Length: 77
Image (cartoon, rainbow, N blue to C red; front, top):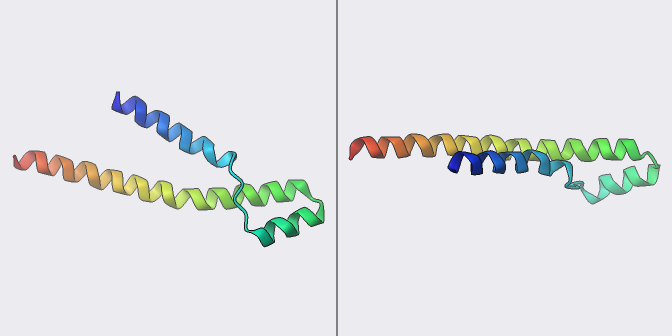
């Protein structure tokens, strides 16, 4: 059950950044005023992926440390 829930959560996290618009106001205004929609979408996707990757890596690191500490505490008992 836990593995299924974890897999579903990972899939949601991987597909979520495609639907989020994360741009600073200046970048967005500049790109929208130029009229180049493809460039605006490309910049938006790049910002989202650059923002999401560190969170995924840090989350994975904390999960790894949590599992190691949990296994170590079970061995001591």
